[in-house]
Length: 278
Image (cartoon, rainbow, N blue to C red; front, side):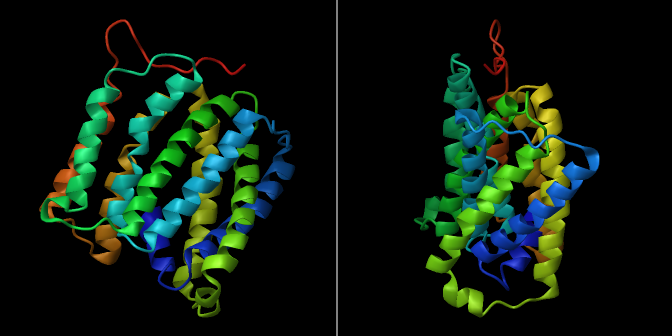
């Protein structure tokens, strides 16, 4: 439901302003929760910790900015491309081999993306689609770093510091690219509903639970669970905006989901996993 909610808010406010509002609402809420429950604020600002922070920030900025130019349902399907790259990055970080299924799933995912972009009729890439595909790379890193960092870091601290960093990143981008749009912002109910919903539902609850339970499994298995996200994104986009995917877009989305599942298939004698953090 997050995709159509944000899409509605972006009709009234520029992407960077929405991100700033969301992240600077998340930070005080998380601090209050951590103080109330006595959670540790300790966070390792090493390569793993910074990897999580930077990939989190880039992912949210690219995805939200991309949503200004593409549909909520397409954004959901294209974001799911991160599942293709999670095994690749996970094996690299874990100093293991890349699953052979990646060599099958990646071409299928590329074909699915091409169908969604209607490249069969010479259609042009939408800048929002390109930004969303880029965010998939960032989110792939985020999932891998979450599994690494979460083994010895409080799950709420893993929301706090990336959210603070993302909010700070959005401020100069807001001044550079959205100053005029910020002045013309409509402070509508849809905007504030989106800020509250994404703060509580999308960040505090969803990311908090993700950070708490994902380290108990490996990143590859977790990414398979997340493949349901684009399906729900398309469903709620249809209910919220009446968005309808064309036959080509439906075929492309189906191929992306198929690629997501193929890449998870364990081959005999080799099961992808992430080694314990050093």
